[in-house]
Length: 78
Image 1: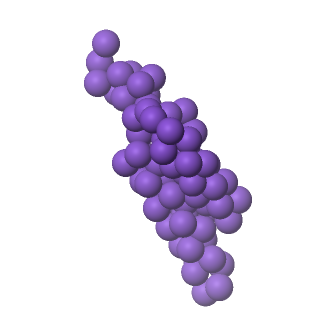
Image 2: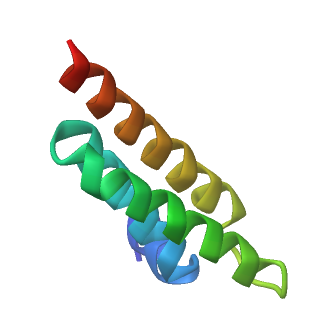
């Protein structure tokens, strides 16, 4: 199995979804996708406290979600 599939299938699903939504939110619909990505990242972190892999992925999802939301607000205000 290639490294991407191993990462995707062994990591918390909410964390992976948060990263993907945050990345898409940077390109389009950041006002909607940013908070969803950040929320999923926070949920993933709370699940990962009980065990599992994907803490860094969850944090990346939170960061991307906040960045997508902030960037879309800044671009909308100019």
